[in-house]
Image (cartoon, rainbow, N blue to C red; front, side, top):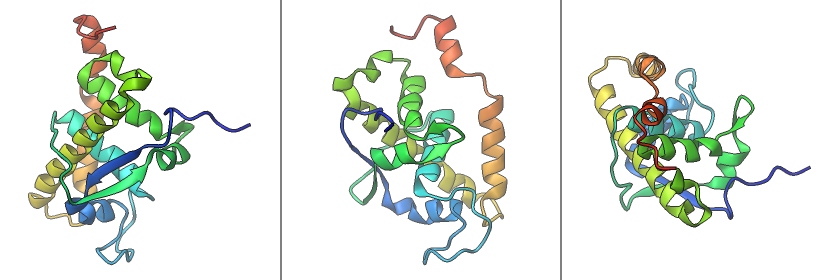
Length: 168
């Protein structure tokens, strides 16, 4: 039985190509796609989800810009984190960031994806700055710190519910 798509149709998710070196670093590769250290992610999808989480965690958003790379929502749906499709993060990150459940309406899919892209771009920008302050070229120390920070921060969605900021 085929899994139902989260999105009404296949869409394109963009990320800033100027950060391809960081995405490669997260995949354990250099600029020529040669393995140089243990990868943290196998595919670009995982690295872009991580970047969007950084953007959300640090409340950083920015435009993707004209020099962009793309990944289809179908690819996010095919890749998994445990039993969950990575496409679910395309929904959750903007939802948590905005508190606007109306973003989940089918007619707002494009807006939802653009919001995800802004968080991913902001997260990559943040990561570039964090890496410039670190002596660890593999990025593992920076990533470990950021994962710990994300785990220990109070979930914004819970705060939104408590403050009744979530627009249902």
